Image (cartoon, rainbow, N blue to C red; front, side):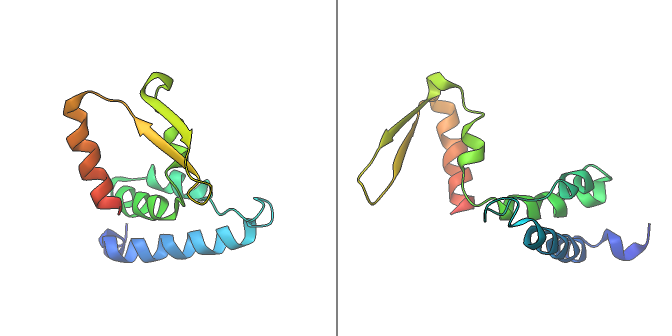
Length: 110
């Protein structure tokens, strides 16, 4: 592999361009919602040098946390209708030791 491809910042820019090009061409097929195309997860699994930059691009392109909510067990999640302008409210029920981990995750995301 060329030494330039060992620089994560360059790989990130290449993968971001790839995502932008493929997302634009697939927008009509996805009814205006842009999700990462299947090529980036494949690239992430190709080699260790590609893993982190490809995953960074994929996670930065996820518009909401909704895709992650499907992996939370039903007995740990309650969804309620909030105020009409706010949409839905999500409540997570988890063991106390996980609260700190989720707090750190949300601070990183927001």
